[in-house]
Image (cartoon, rainbow, N blue to C red; front, side, top):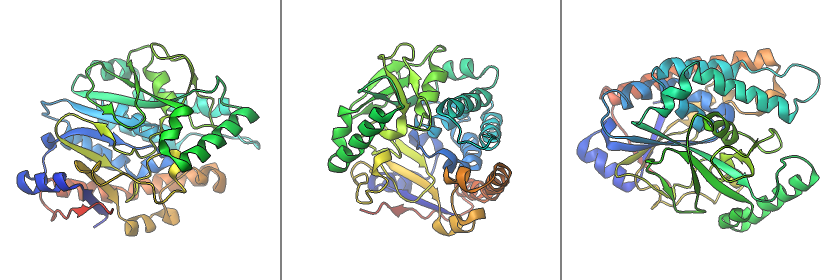
Length: 350
């Protein structure tokens, strides 16, 4: 089996009682992770065909960084075509030249990826979709208006050190700002959140801000209808999420790159920091198994190191090969939802 499925206690009990059906889920979560999303792109296509057609209850989509890009694609009238556009634009991004690309170069390339994924009418389609309610997570920098220079690097380092002592301390450096429709049903418990209503004037800036990796990209200044300031990658606070938020009644579906959850960007070296079992009570996480990941080209999930370690042509070739191989994940999830495979659900590890 190329997939691992984990679920919290209440989620396991509900699935055992009611079975595996789309209307059981009220929330879909998408993590940060840059190129790692490529192992999920084929699964996202299956997800669109299973989770969305015939749906009557609203589904809240909560995403940071590439997770918010994926959810934007899912929210369009033809999600399969939008996912394919996002796939192509993401894989085929190029940074030719002997020197490292500037922050402006990477920001411009990411803005193009978002625009290509949305297509000609994507903004309007997403904003009028009242069944899928996008929540785009960003991190507003509290200590200035620039994401470059020595002062910013030192302050960013200080925030990482403070986070090692307490995740709550990140609130002194960053404010979580969530761009969402007014009726969106997600409310954060940890660190709180300011809210700004998604509109045609801030949708693409919000998506760009959500994916604006510090030191690699410029960030977004003063998106409309939101507190003034510099907006950076939502993954700083919510890399894989700590799941300390309130949702509408129902289960939380979490397609993920790994069989582990790292709450914030600075928690990557802190292996002990992970969500509590209580906060994962309603979560169902679907991820590729470690054995499947080891069988992929390169023996790993794609990541940003591929930009440094591979030529552009070699990177693109490998990423397309990974996407093709992950058709096995798509087939497995389709078989599970159709009842053609035995559903084995593991508990989360404490």
